[in-house]
Image (tube, rainbow, N blue to C red; front, side):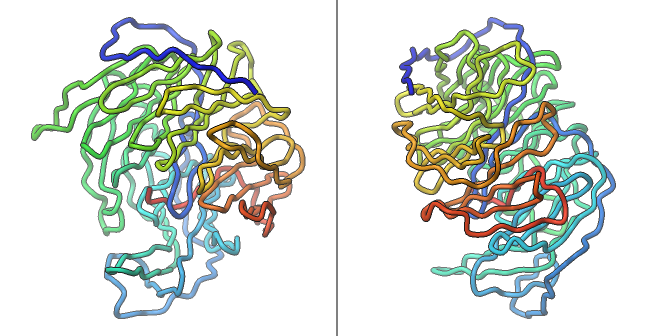
Length: 448
């Protein structure tokens, strides 16, 4: 293990453009019920939303259930979170506690799924936009307690229009959608998604279309990436929208070649990855944290709003067709210090996660889920979950994927069509379920 203390450069405005190579990265968002481990490049189109099959739930009428336009619902004694798992030609909705298939939605093409941020819905990146998938499980707060409900999952006709739906990010009660083909950024209140009609969106368009990402902050500010179809070089922080919808610039930076991916840290700090480090956005200012290598790419990240440390990947070979990294990064946004941790295994963009206590989780190609102290970088334990594997060259191809929430981690194994549940406190696999299809992307409904 080696520790690098970097030089911090405060950036209020930078105007120098840099031409860069295109790369891919991942966005990580964490959930209160279930979290998405990562996100990758712009999705390939999918089409023809299908109908649910294999439903195992028989809901009953309840006159006291709030009338929100949802299917008939049944109140449950405890929360019943659900997972969404993509496969070639569809999306499975599973019970998170038992792994059983609740519904199977047939959707042609390669499908991407994103947590919608309301603890209930998932957004499916498909032809024409982000389609709403109701997982059929949610909780409602009533004073000092909550009520939990389940119903049949529904793939709705509702779709947020986008020519090339890319990243979907949720934070501070807002969900932000990015259209890579147009640069259009659409923001809506996450809790309004359960209505019968699509919620109203607040729209903003970047200067040029690119594969990008945007984040909405609690104070109304909006962070957007900047670039074009050939390169991406930085970010812009905009103030709260005026009555006419316009925004003015708070801070900007072009010192981030290949900008891609975002993660949230404690105290509403936003981190975005670059090919030579990352940018830290805090209190209206942008600070560059540089990699120790001329090419030290940090893109895929996993953060947590209760931790100042962000877990990230780290790649050193600019010319590699596919670099299989054996080093990861830990960046403390409180001090802007970057630490590199060397491993004896590799991992992929779907291998990073965080535990409830803030530990860094890395799913290795050695088949183990490695748990690290995020403040020191020291490995605490390793749990054998799947057989050894190798990352495929094509990023769309299935590979073992990690989804972590609280003290539980979910790991898919495409080779055996299995979904494994890992108890992080006990340090063991507690359940293994064989799925009817080969799993690819894994996510859950999140409200954080």
